[in-house]
Length: 157
Image 1 (cartoon, rainbow, N blue to C red):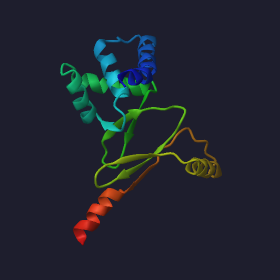
Image 2: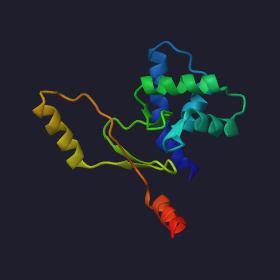
Image 3: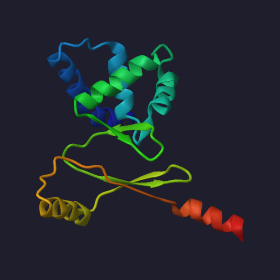
């Protein structure tokens, strides 16, 4: 199983190292370790959550190094920084060839990725009707997930 994870993360890590080289930045062992851990840790993670993940792997890596490396991953187009209603930046692996939106539970914070061509088409149609050409967008839907609704309904009965 580890071999499979290595093959999926290696191209992204190599792309990051290539980016660093093109920018004349140091490709330190810590930055490489952070990039590898990032690509092996799916989801939408705050700096703090990701830092705790890194600490389990290598306690010598500092939070500032993690933050700066996440910013470099974003600059390289390999990570995306998203802000939800709580105002906390969360990072996820960027997939340039596919776009997705998010549904966010306001109770537990669960984030569900959604991709629906109807939404994408409607956004383009609306932009066009107003004379806009879209270069990007953020679409987050907020509500209460089924698990939290069920728990709420159980407590109110």
